[in-house]
Amino acid sequence: MEVEQERHVLVILPHPDDEAFGVSGTIAIHTKRETPVTYACLTLGEMGRNLGNPPFATRESLPDIRKAELKKAVEAIKIQDLRMMGLRDKTLEFEDDQKMMNMMTDLINELDPSLVITFYPGYSVHPDHEATARAVVRAVRAMDEEKRPKLHCVAFANNTAEEIGAADIRYDIRHVYDQKMEAMKAHISQTIWMLKELESGVAQEGSELQDRFNYEHFWTYTFDENDKVTEIK
Image (cartoon, rainbow, N blue to C red; front, side, top):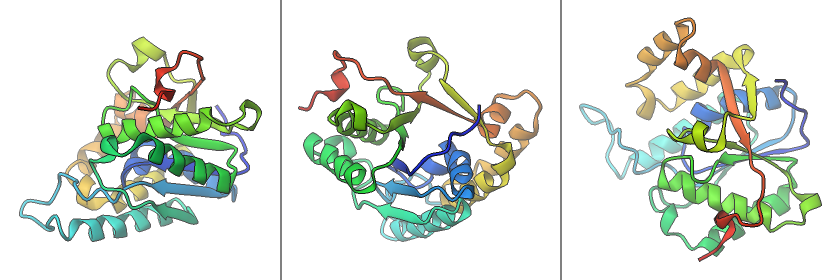
């Protein structure tokens, strides 16, 4: 499937490296076309589990390391507008629902994107992913239907295919694969332990990793009147 031309793409994800794994190829295609892309990264991933063995970082120094890595990854895929939103890693599920929704609404109102990319609520595993996805869906749902941007979501829970079906969109990103790998390598504090095995797996013809990293998959979010995701506590 061909990546559609967009007016402005808004990517909203909670952690540095979320963009590299899931959507960096798609972003690179948009930026090659000089389509404006804004990346709103909600936290600095300061609770990342990898501090090295022997440790190369402490809890106090890790935020600065991950911030620098995020900037390097963004440079690799040519994003011009990076927003670091200042929330705390592993706490997004405890943020006020209305506050989270308002943050997303403000971004959408400012940028008027034709496409928003985020996680799929209920199928993105990590509590921070889920909180981000819910807030984005609520913000888009609250808009007048004719003004809503398209909403493309990343899903990877084990029950994804059986519950919401196969991905609606499958983009071939092989021509920007080197940029995707460059973005992943930028997040070296969190990816160093997997990169050799990953590159080996991607090279294996027909492997699951080859499909996952040569193609990027998205589900289009469709709104339902009974959608409980939009309920605010």
